[in-house]
Image 1: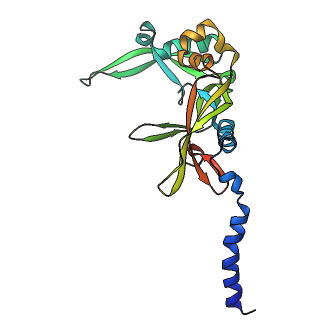
Image 2 (image 1 turned 45 degrees about the vertical axis):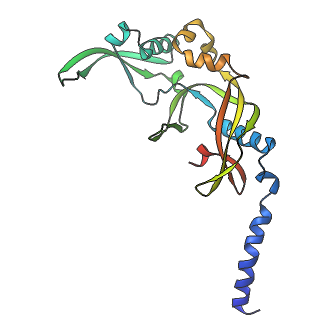
Image 3 (image 1 turned 30 degrees about the vertical axis):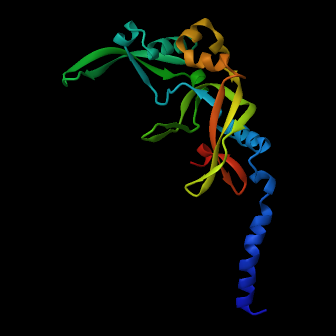
Length: 218
């Protein structure tokens, strides 16, 4: 066969081969496919974290007197042996630019605390920006409970997208169930208390391999 005809035949055959490799069943907007997509997302990114991205964390004496969120949470984590503290001083500037030296505690993770500091990307999206943090302090794992429904798929920016509504189950760290933890981490407690009933929404899009969470291919 002439070389040109061989190349032409290959050019025709390749799209057919790629199409044959795609399972039409995985392309459907179905409960089974969305269940797979959400379960896969939670297996990779289903950590419940508390937005403690960067360490050490500094808590001033003024924060402690005011019972700030960091002050309450760091005191609890220290009592659990997950962080350790040492005295330090920090420079604080007021609105007028005047600088004041403040007494503070600087908290760092212990070996036990490092087990909760997971180097898994955390995406924080707002109306104006999207920031990915490389790590966070995480206190529970989510898994899929069930898929409730989804929006009608539509094409946006050249890809087919939708969002899936689902509920979750949760496996929290044992210490999160203490009364002290309930006071220090109210949002974590809400997630624990509402497992199996609170509905979350996940954006997904269609790929040649099936439906995938937007965050996994961002």
